[in-house]
Length: 503
Ligand SMILES: C[S@@+](CC[C@H](N)C(=O)[O-])C[C@H]1O[C@@H](n2cnc3c(N)ncnc32)[C@H](O)[C@@H]1O
Image (cartoon, rainbow, N blue to C red; front, side):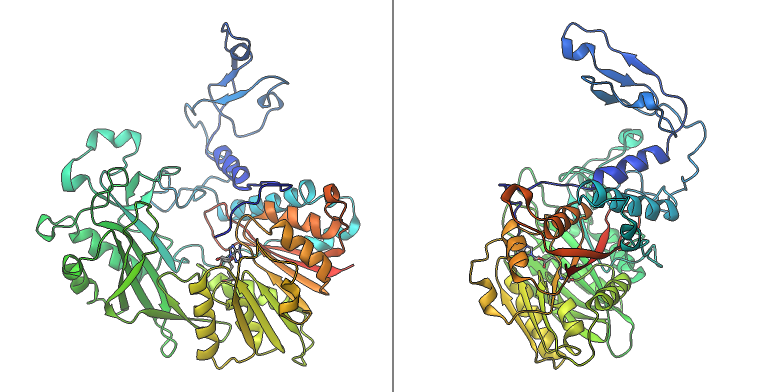
């Protein structure tokens, strides 16, 4: 997987902004700033805030040399106008949905504003430029705000994470075990969850069945302890796809365990397989002390090894560990926007370079309309999935190559003809400087930059359009459009589709 490049690179994280917005949304009252009198010089200038506020008074910001310490909200006098009651009972304690108590309109407004500010401040585009107003497109909201996730990963834990006001209810032994989502910021604290409003109804049925019986002492199942490194059950991963013939949901259940002991899982498999939507139950065995869900070995316990999904007329086989866009509904929207940006001539003559191609989904949805697609991706399993997906769909003009785009050599461009369109869809760290330099030298007429992190996206747009000033490299692209898309309601995540054309 990609690592953050170190030298000459700006590290960027965009989440904190929306988290601040959320903090504002649930608070009220006045702000009182006290000066702490203490002996140390640093302590003396520290302020503490005993209550937070729904508006931002200018005194909120510390003076030069002062640090700000947010203590705790005392009470809410009146809720913020964007505040809503979160429909999920776990919303305030779960690390999954961070902004469910903001109205959806406020969520997308905040996301749009965040992208706008990052493009100005990090991307160095000017708000005063009249052309810029046409570049920034309004965010595309997600029509479906619940049940939109096709993949959820729940963790097993040895001790339920309880919110402060419930600590007195703490139970020990099997009753204290947890199956659910992590408390925000804790890899070892699991909040017990009976239902997740982001996943499909069928997936919730499976979760309910597992919750109902996995603590039964007679089954002899134990959760994995991430500190002591003992125990059997690590994760329960649920993936929802679609039967290509009927269009009905089909489900994969993946038990991630620390050892291979299928007889222990048998009673669960028997119960879960009675749900008609379940077509695949697999077991990933991960013997490492790390708590990732990818096993060194995978065993089929029931049905098939993959489920299927259709995106823009192309059928995809999805295995337990392959990357697939987690919001299928909005992926359709995203891929349509990408195709619109590609501006295909319609004569099937274009060469497309699909960088960070994953299982080939973007390239394959374009392949029937272009001359050839070349896809590059670091994960070997994703490349074999991409090749299989091409074959299953009778697509013969797509070549998928495994390789690390952070380590490209000078001869990288010799491996494919000059592309008409480059699609680059990196994960959060964005593009490595080597790739930026390669693209500036390649000078493809069009780049479609798809990003899940507007901060690194803004940085890379700056490099491609304005150059890498510190290395005396000139930019050669013009930003034609920037379209934020909400793929993940109730979370701070934002996707952007940017169209760049050779200047
Ligand atoms: C955001 S996903 C995009 C996947 C695909 N375009 C899609 O829409 O399904 C980013 C992909 O980049 C891959 N990746 C991350 N670092 C990489 C690197 N250094 N070189 C090549 N691929 C990398 C990941 O494995 C992942 O499949």
